[in-house]
Length: 121
Image (cartoon, rainbow, N blue to C red):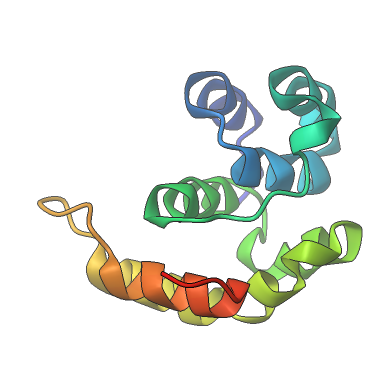
């Protein structure tokens, strides 16, 4: 699968989200300027804080060639991503189990994200 540049561009312009834009800015250099234009450099480096943020990150990574397996590259650029990157497969499994077409709630995912971030839920 090739990286879906057009789909990513459309999603960035429609949904943005600092954590997702951080991923794209690192893994898709062609879209870095667009990412900076949407959130400025002050927002890059943000990690997902809830299920909605995680959802965007998850979908961005699915649109990027070998995206999920390259999450460590984001952590190398932004060290605050290292904990999330280390647990990405676990978080993705929780996401896939909890998120359905009928329910957008993911309390187990949210709780685990807060534990990884070291914050109280």
